[in-house]
Image (cartoon, rainbow, N blue to C red):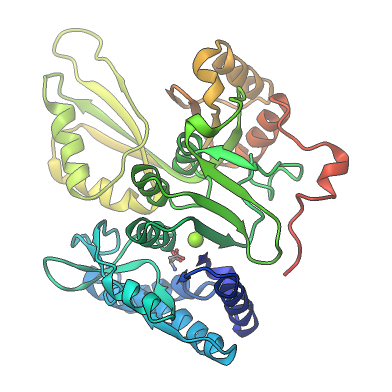
Length: 413
Ligand code: ASP
Ligand code: MG
């Protein structure tokens, strides 16, 4: 059972999470709970670090950020004791979460869950601090990237061969668009790994991308549901288990994209390789890439790509340091809208419809990229909301009126 930041935001909610954990235990299950930091704790710690230092040393950043999750776990263990059950809280390191050494974005390399297993055998409820581990190399504390508690939960579930990994959150499940933008967005009772991977990669915030990859690779069943009520939520299942393949399953968006244009890229083999190797070495995830071919022999080319807004400064530093290009230009205020659906693989015309709908809205397409089950367009960041609404509407993804006020609405905590 994994509880996100909102679900443990204050003492009452920690007690509520503790009650749910205890109820699962009393129903006869062995329970491990992975907790996030309370509310906006991690954001607050990041701000604090930035007050002290412009570029905080990443090792110390991880020492700092990993504390939030430990607080949640210790408090929840106390609450569980008061409910008459034995509980023990563990840091990521104590729980055997082993990672590489890329501080603030570490990857789990192994989970040695013997200590968790022993505590379970001892009839204890185990609380594991999410979002953190320990480097096998340096023995330093690491963190797994924002939203990383999801990945901790999936990794622990995989290591223990758990029946299910339940992700308790502040929404009812996985929606087919952001309900804050599209009020009649629909909750998906079932979604395939491949679709939810594309959704998460293109901006949907429900689950950390890596957690879905990990779950798919290790065959972990994910059940995403609300911590505030008992309704079923969303099951993430394999492609074979999904009954139908709708043409379009979801519309997602992101507003944290920055566009970089590099002019005067020398027209010779290997240049793109060098450029993107440098960016990769700086740990920057490049998303969409377009190259405009040069206008004839020996003329320089132009390369445009997107990076997360937070990585823009480092990306620009890296490119300038290469000193090979005429000009590097950037726009930090881009947005991206994506349409995802396993059914589009075998149906023509989805891209045409997406472009037509956006055109009717007077939205200019700056860049386009596709996968077999996704069409993404980079557009002006300010128009993202309009784009999502228009596409959700055009593909008829909304809930019927009566449902909109019924089962699917989030319930106040
Ligand atoms: N507390 C961390 C964050 O805010 C990890 C998580 O919540 O999953 O990103
Ligand atoms: Mg989260």
